[in-house]
Amino acid sequence: MSTNTPIILNAGQVSALIGKIDLAAELRDMFVELGRNQAVQPPQTVTLFPEDRGDFITYMGAQGQSGVFGAKLSPYLVTGGKPVITAWTILMSMETGQPLLLCDAGQLTTERTAGTTALAVELLADPKATRLAIIGAGSVAQAHYRHVKGLRDWQTVQVYSPGLGSDDAKQGNWRDLCGDVSFAATAEAAAANADVVMLCTSSGTPVIESSAFGANTLVTSISTNVPQAHEVDPEWLSAAQVYCDYRATTPNTAGEMALATKNHGWTAEAIQGDLAELTNGAAPKPEAGKPRFFRSVGLGLEDIAAAQAVLRCLETEA
Image 1 (cartoon, rainbow, N blue to C red):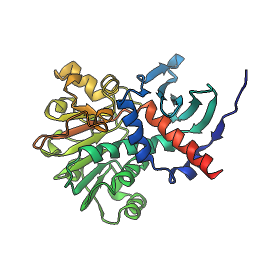
Image 2 (spheres, rainbow, N blue to C red):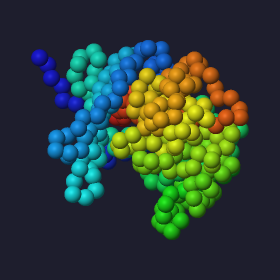
Image 3 (cartoon, helix red, strand yellow):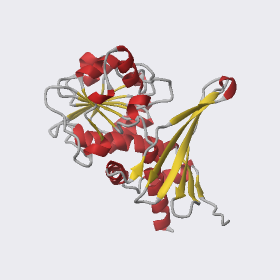
Image 4 (cartoon, one colour):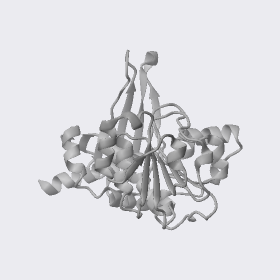
């Protein structure tokens, strides 16, 4: 049997390539492919380590048109102090069955998460949106801003994160990224009158009061490793027009959806559409007068698409 040694890229090597990738185009093409049943997205799985030593999440996917499949493994390792969280993606050929790439997926995960949110903002936010709020201030929040900054004519950008107001270094980083940024005293103050509110935290519990959202506000939310993590009040889902990255898997993973189903009479049938449907014109756009909620849990196909883009970029430069 023939063997093939995959290209192995560490975090620094991946970072050097990311800025050269049109990740938005890669993700859009992947979701179009998924919506046409030319890609497969299984549910993510969580495997617990013995003796309460943590777990790892497996994100899998296969792209038929692109001829690749693979998985990302993301462990959560319990230590005596801060837990260790890493992520590695393996990309394989659907033609030969041989490995093509093994890469550190830390920054790729950050970028594909932000890129997926940006695609949702492009498709779901009011075309005339001008006011942006970001809850969270770390690398994920900054990536979110970079990916959406050209999607609308943002007149105001407000950021809130606990402690940000007294952290000159973090404020300086944000001013380098967005010269007109302002820093709010609370999450609710940041979201007041905002057209788009991007929640970019690692919290397992709500980070903002739902009363802060306006009638036409788009609220986006992401995932973390915390069990049943949710950044919004599950009860609020019944008041929103709900969208997600992939309706076949997201409701079973997203904490607020599971809790809303269990405790508040919400059902997954209420989801208006997902990115596979939206990119193929098969889901209704939001109506005016009711807030919009987009939930991303992270898909293996997003990791596969990002890894393939890195490999393609590397091969082009070779």
